[in-house]
Length: 87
Image 1: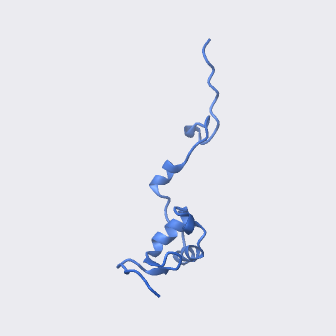
Image 2: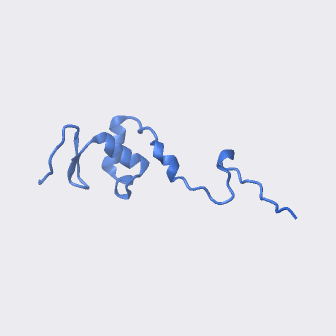
Image 3: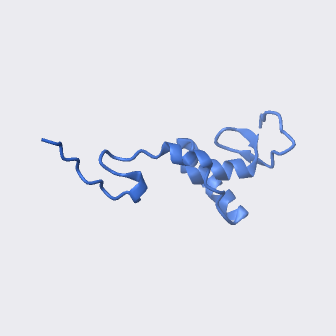
């Protein structure tokens, strides 16, 4: 088995990408689906069970949320009142 260098924080071997990796990073990528290859990975799901709980929501996750037109974010997703043009 050929492997790349193992860093001081690397505590498991990722079979999909064939690299040594940090388990917390693996669980983060799996749980928050930051990479399509990691979101459905069985090894990531197993690592999540080992750690016991999902990682905290990243601060940047709110930036990735796209609201449909006409939804007021301040109203928690309730459609905004349509604007009536002054005549």
